[in-house]
Length: 163
Image (cartoon, rainbow, N blue to C red; front, side, top):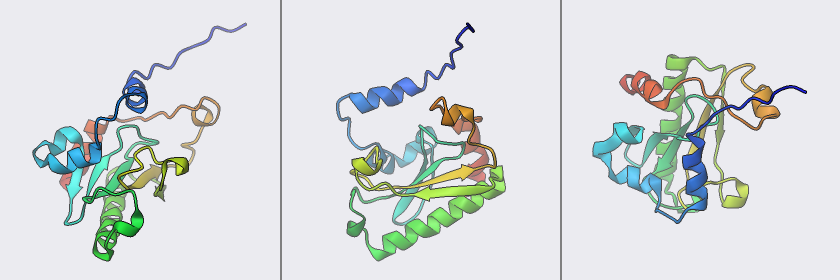
């Protein structure tokens, strides 16, 4: 019999507690309204109708969220101007990530509703997830664990000058 090893991920407790704790309001709206705290909140950039923030519980290094300023979980509530701004911002983020960390590809997605995987169903957002050949390995497949190899603060410092 082999000895079992542990992979310590103490940052996950914050996520678990947020899922099971009392509603503390929408963090995206909080970040939207705290422009003076963009670096602390890891808000990478802002445009007329949306803003970009690092996902604090990323699937991969550089996982960004593009969120509308409007607090809504309904894509139909977004104006055409907002939708276009979000897509242009998404394209700019893809370009910045490509320059800075050179991923081989990207996943882009919107989860609408909790049953569709939305962890924050009342504030729509687009996920932009950089991917590399071979980044899905035994940890993700068998261990249901994502390994993120760079701190968000380090990557923020690398990406911010490119915005």
